[in-house]
Image 1: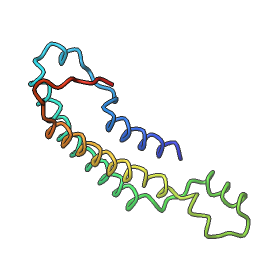
Image 2 (image 1 turned 30 degrees about the vertical axis):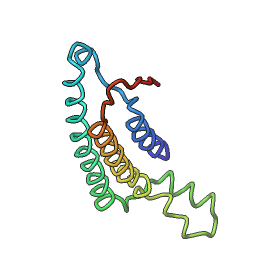
Image 3 (image 1 turned 90 degrees about the vertical axis):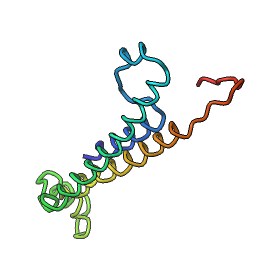
Length: 131
């Protein structure tokens, strides 16, 4: 269950670095200015998708967060005998909340990339540094 958090952090981090999975075959044949506008559009769409992911995670937590994972409840009881406050580990909400966090992080990452691309100003005569 905890791996979902790793996926969510990795998704936002990859988006910030512009190293996420995408299909560039078609984009490679287009002019650079058109590609920039396509990436701006994709960033705006990803802001919306991140918001929808956070919202759906919220709905998961509200509707099914109280459900128990029997294996996790048993594990929580075995690991922390006598610590009733640790029983939350056996419910679904801590793991479904990863979608909320992931959606918020994706929204922020896409907004940062959008602003980065939008405000990117070409300086005449400047040397481009790749990397």
